[in-house]
Amino acid sequence: MDQTEGQERGAGQGAAPGPVKERLWIYDTTLRDGQQTQGVQFSTPEKRQIAEALDRLGVDYIEGGWPGANPTDSEFFAALPRVRARVAAFGMTKRAGRSAENDDVLAAVLDAGTDTVCLVGKTHEFHVTTALGVTLEENLEAIRASVAHVVAKGREAILDAEHFFDGYRANPAYALDCLQAALGAGARWVVLCDTNGGTLPAEVGRIVAEVIAAGVPGDRLGIHTHDDTGTAVAATLAAVDAGARQVQGTLNGLGERCGNANLTTLIPTFLLKEPYASRFETGIDREALSGMVRVSRMLDDILNRVPRRASAYVGASAFAHKAGLHASAILKDPATYEHVDPALVGNVRVIPMSNQAGQSNLRARLAEAGLEVPSGDPRLGRILETVKAREDQGYAYDSAQASFELVARRELGLLPSFFEVKRYRVTVERRRVGEGTMTLSEAVVVVLIDGQRVLSVSESLDENGTERGPVNALSKALAKDLGRWQSVIDDMRLVDFKVRITQGGTEAATRVIIDSEDGQGRRWSTVGVSPNIVDASFEALLDAINWKLVRDARQEDSR
Image (tube, rainbow, N blue to C red; front, side, top):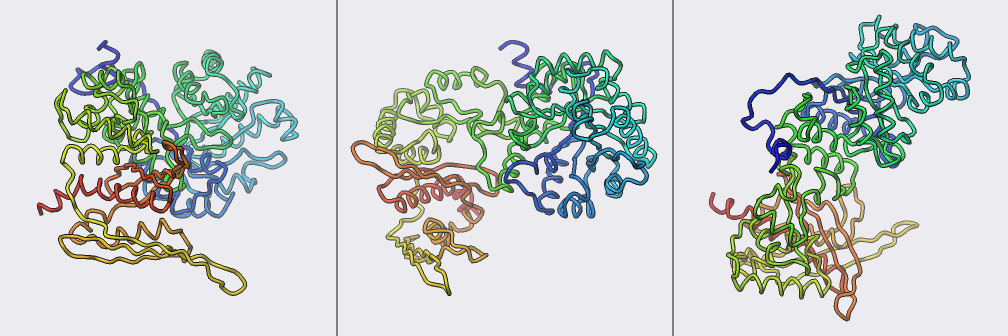
């Protein structure tokens, strides 16, 4: 392992004090830019929940939205959450033809009462003359007067220099004049915005360096990028390399069109990767960083979205090693195929199983489950043959690690029998209600637990009276009464349900993959296969509950 890799995987663990680090300021815009994502609309309680999570993470600024722009933002500012971070109210510079003191839109932003105010101002002459319809000098005066008014009110002022990179290419002198107008009026930060998201990282770095050379201090300069070319994170890093010291972005890269720079990628990079880890400090420490996966998934839960598996650092596949050669090397030293320790961001290593797997993958995956099986053990061959045979029927164990573990435990004779399903039944009924119709599903499950038969019944309506389907009814019935094991599964919930028709062997089959989560933030995937979608779903549900019991029931049973 070379020195750089050692720093990335273990920086801060017993190392001697290094040189004084430069401060890098993290400015989150999830509550405003993130809300501009197509299909996203936060409620006021959700905005407070996100703000509190961001504060626990340790970001420096939380942009709460635009006061007066909509009822949700106004309600948020009317009762701000108690946070350590500086909450920023967002707005725009004063309009032409009126003073800053008499601009009602600017007044609404100041009335929000936040210590920090971020104003967007035009810096591209095309937008000034075409979109605003004012002269270049009138726009400069709007920036000067607005920032001065904010500062006079005792607030920290930030200028978001809209369309800056496009404006700089068209007229560098005027774009710089806009920045200097804000700084001269007392702005703490001027932020270069790649509003259209079309500027590539090399050009971002060059322009940031030229802006600093022209007299704008780097420690008063920020960067705000969009991901329209898929390079928002790279462009942000280029800006930091060139001297910008405030970084704006959103959780999970939310934002208009293709999104904003993703803070769940940038923050771990600043803390764990060189040269950033040695050069900079942020308000985020290692303990908070270990909650990054949970924060990311919390946001997805609020949005009712499935987390993107391939997301850097926080995705379920970010540390998944499927190739046999890779898994073999991982067993010897994880640094062979992992650029950082997954635990540093709250993630876990995954050794997927599939019909391409060899014994290196198998033993590594078993070890992850706490199952040590010596090399050459004949049971390893039986597990591999079972996996290959079942995948030929349509199962997919590289996407359902929990189901694989249960298969392995069964072959190893290490799978306890917690309960036995004697039978189940699902009915679907369509009724006329007034002038319309409604569909209602009902499930009955009979299980044998400790020699006692238990019958559970559940219907598919949720607490709001909305029909959720037969699989939902079946899930609720199965998890309704498992006797002495019930407390172990009470914190389980279904977070995703995927169905695919696949060709297994000579007959088509339905594959169902279910993702579950518990109160500890653990997620696991299980798979079921059958020509019948309900039966495939039931198999996946059974595996989900049994995996949870394998992990937690022994602890519960010992109490």
